[in-house]
Image (cartoon, rainbow, N blue to C red; front, side, top):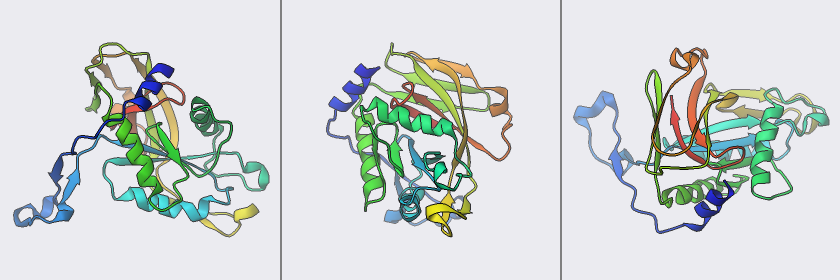
Length: 258
């Protein structure tokens, strides 16, 4: 898998112009008038993972700007993971899971680093940063999109009510995980009552509640049934995104909301 990661990093090429589509309200289509605002880029969905903590002093001031950078782009999906590194400092993160600590560590270790930080924004498992500086989230996303658009082969994930389909012109590949990531789309604000962020409020968006591996992709085209719970919407108010990812800490090659 390291060979694929190295290849992705080496094959930056001039990006092809992104096609545009005219986006309009279904309620006002007859009276639609073209303006610059009605044209949106057609891009593959980019998964933006935000690792944060209610006990991290840097998170409260940074998170609003991160949210603002992402919310207006329909081709970005924010997924929030609360980590537990700061729980020993007097406040236990209400959404924290050690599973998310491990997911963040997997990225850092894959990149050969020896430190972690929060907040951390990771786009498609390829590019990262704190997301706190002006335009930093945009730069992270652009870097990830540049790598994906420069790949010498293509992969697309699509779903319907019963099946997940992967189409690719790469006939053979190392095994990649096919994951269903469940998240709560309802925003929730938590007021911190202890420790360094006492009295501060942190908004949480698209908090991840679970990740389930449902199969592997090894190249070519693949069609597989979705688990019954996903087909029936059996996760209550949660939403689900399917991703194809190169193992722990590897790049996310394709994503599709169910």
